[in-house]
Length: 91
Image 1 (cartoon, rainbow, N blue to C red):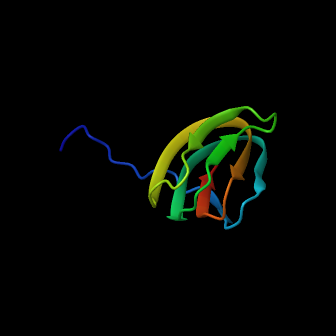
Image 2: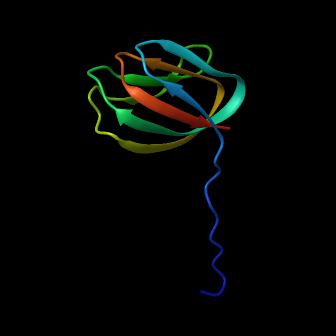
């Protein structure tokens, strides 16, 4: 179609998390693009900045899938409340 430009979303870098833990993904300003949930567990997944302010919370036992976020943050920290297998994609 004329006038429509199709672009791919940015690939970014990724971090895999498989335990209940607090993971500092990026200490400087960045964008969390998406969270890919491979295996879910009965614990929430919280995305927060380095000051501890939550930007997004994925509920416990969330279905497996890709969750697009696109949130710009001052540092990216992911807190997993249980041993879900997730991949965090960020810039």
